[in-house]
Image 1 (cartoon, rainbow, N blue to C red):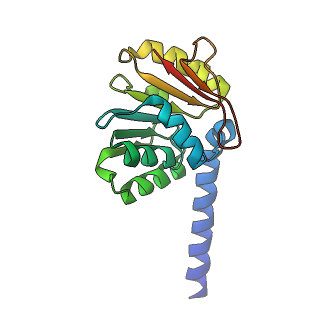
Image 2: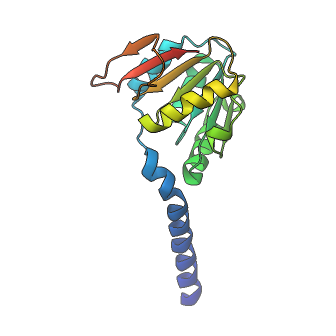
Amino acid sequence: MLDIFVIIWVVLFLSILAIAVYAFPAIAVVGPIPTPKKGIDNAVVLAKIKPGEKFYELGCSDGRVLVRTVEKYDCFGVGYELVFPLCLLAKLRAKLSKKSKKIDIRCQNFFKADLRDADVIFCFLTFGLMQKLEKHFRKQGLKENVRIISYGFRIKNLEPEKFIKRNKENWNIYLYKL
């Protein structure tokens, strides 16, 4: 009996260790850094989301921004998260949402994502990733007037349409239209 108990704990420990090792490179680069609720509200209100629009979150972490936005604005949400444990957490959060049928969480690299039908794209990523995304956005052939919200970091080669300066409730928030 004791041997089975020890084997279960060893397998559990090694599984958690394997997940951590797999996830560490991505977590070491971009976070995760939770977005405060007030910061989410301040950021998303800039985009003036209408019911039925498509809201994409790149690097959705635990899904809190995506789920909150879909619930508040009755839009469709698509989240991309590469770190598997965070993706599972986002899927669970989406499943528990009252708008679960309008939320799709994808465990994949957002640089391989098709973003052409997005109305709004939300990003809380590093400065370096935002610069790479600017090139990716241009290659994608996004919808005209797609709104891009960058929470925290500016996109160097674009002029924001609107800007909210960092305060006690949020980081810098930039709204771009392509």
